[in-house]
Amino acid sequence: ALLPILNYPDPRLRTIAEPVKEVTAEIKTLIADMIETMYDAQGIGLAASQVDRHIQLIVMDLSEDKSQPRVFINPKVTPLVEEKQPYEEGCLSVPDVYDKVERPTKVRIEALDENGDKIDEEVEGLLAVCIQHEMDHLNGVIFVDYLSRLKQTRARDKVRKVIKIREKQS
Ligand SMILES: O=C(O)C[C@@H](Cc1ccccc1)C(=O)SCC(=O)c1ccccc1
Ligand SMILES: [Zn+2]
Image (cartoon, rainbow, N blue to C red; front, side, top):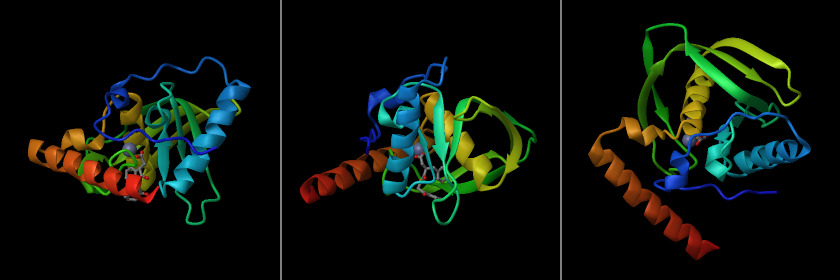
């Protein structure tokens, strides 16, 4: 089922996510719903925080044909290099706002997958950017927090406009 995505600056997006204790049937349903919601919203990642579920769960699919969804449960991300790289980020909770954010170029991801099996990978490129962006969501951080006050104000105004247009369309 499609889930409603919280929009910036909704304070619920600032909630710190709790660790997942057990991958229950309910969580497997949530994972399927998040993947469906991510594809519908044309995203490449989605954190549970964005659908108002405050558990440490991220879904991601960087494939062209939306055929390789990945699930990260209780993820831990560790930078492997000091070097940072800028990337033009977007966010499904801040629609139509894109801006450069600098993040460590290479990171280690430790997590569990949807079967409770260990993930332990060193990644760079868009996967490294996206996992750090999603990890921020689980810690109540949104990418606009790294931008200037002026850009944050513009982002709030932009989201307000986009939501109004979407409400008219629905
Ligand atoms: O809000 C989210 O977490 C999803 C977000 C993930 C993300 C994309 C790009 C850089 C960092 C994090 C999105 O999927 S934004 C929409 C999108 O598909 C996209 C935007 C910019 C570059 C590439 C993809
Ligand atoms: Zn986001």
